Length: 89
Image 1 (tube, rainbow, N blue to C red):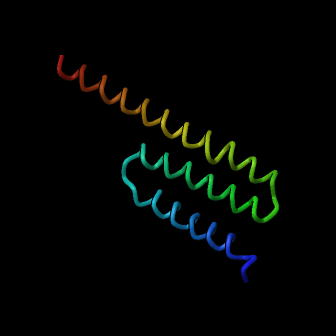
Image 2: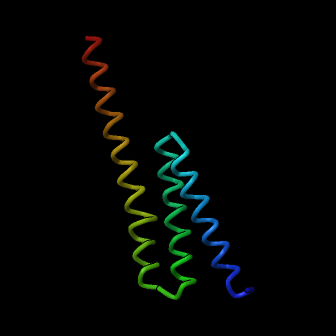
């Protein structure tokens, strides 16, 4: 049972980070929590002795996906701002 304690803690962290990501409404905070979720998943994969999957999760889940979310939010906000400016002119 003591051997499974780190894995159990990791799974609880994954569940908590996933739930928090869904419940938060701000996209910037969501991307931060998504990155935290990726780190937690990578830790779980490492504890399950799957270092290749953990490394892939670090690259994709913790770095690229949150970055793409932030860039998309930035693009949408810029477009909305420029449309509002055009309406006022």
